[in-house]
Structure formats: C-alpha cells, structure tokens
Image (cartoon, rainbow, N blue to C red; front, side, top):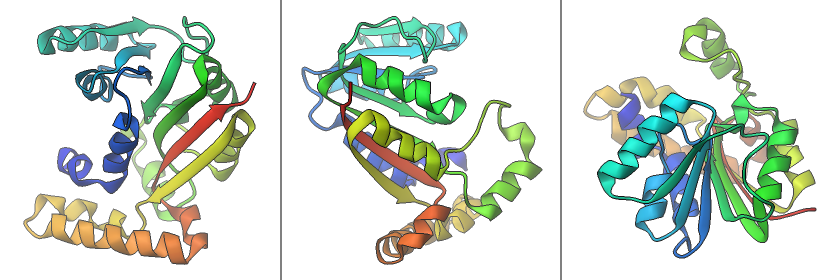
Length: 224
C-alpha cells in the first residue's frame, strides 16, 4: 500500500519535478540520501551528483545500486550538519524526509553554506500540526525513529532566515483518509479526487494549510 501511495502521491510528483527541473550539467547533492532516491534520476538527467548519509550501510547499498545502474554518483558517509563539502559546491541540494530528523537551524545553515549564490534547495517533509495525524503518530511509535519531529510552522519560518526566496507547497488533508483504501480498486481514484479537493482548500482557505500532512519546500538564493 505504501509503495502505491508514494507512486500516486501529488507531493512526491511535485518534489521530483522540482528536483529534476533544469538539472543537466548542474552539481546536485541528495541530502540524507539513505540508499539513494533522487540521486539516480538526477544522474540520468545529466547532473553531477553526490549523496551524503550518516549510515554506512545505506551508503554501501547506494554505491552498489549506482554501480548496478552504471551511474557515477559520489555517495559518502557523513554528518548532515557538518558536511565534507566546500562552500558553494552545489547548484542544488534536495532531500526527502530528512530535515525532520535534524536540528533544523544548523541543518538549513549547512545546506545554505554548500549552495552556490544562485543555488536552490528542494525538500519534501511531513508537517506536524494535524491533530488526527499526531494521534496516529502517538498510537504507532514503532513506525518512527526517536529523533523524528515533523516540521512545524516555526521550522518553516527558519528557512526564511537562510534563503532570500522560500516557497511552500501544501499537500494531504482530506486525502489522508483515503490512504487505507489504496489497496482496493477504486481507492486510487478516490485518493486523487481528494487530493484535488485538498488543493482547492489550500488555495481558497489558507488556514487549512496548517493541517496539511506534507509540504514541499523550495528555497533559493542562500543568505550569507
């Protein structure tokens, strides 16, 4: 069910669209890459790609997968808050579900440091205000690690301290209730219908954004 969710999830579609846009010939870093996710399509599209993660096991898996695909990607073990890359090393930094594992201020400061002056960052992250989602999180602690803290509005505000331009795209409100139905035939159609309802609500009723399940954050022009 989760694989089907991510395959049809509007937030992930937007994330990958923004990541891959205009990446050919650019330098890109997948931040908190795990076994690799965006790194592979970026490399296929012609970017010069690196990936960093704290897990040596995940990095070994990523290196094996890159070799299997015949892709040249510089996967490294390292601390996301103290990266082994020089200032202004990348045109793009991207990450999927990484910021909510980190201390947000030092993480964003480090992301800004390794970006070029006109560089950009794209992240997809869970948001932490929806009371029903938070109840589910409390009832299922085994589904998460102890360091997870879904982002809050204050965390999103920190991006404005480190970047001149920040755009936040909101996803998942009513559509969250259709996730259990994805295993059934009409579930995906219902999910997509509710995603369209979500988009209308977020556009017409801005207060609903506070209760979104996911955000895609685009930040550009790091401040020094």
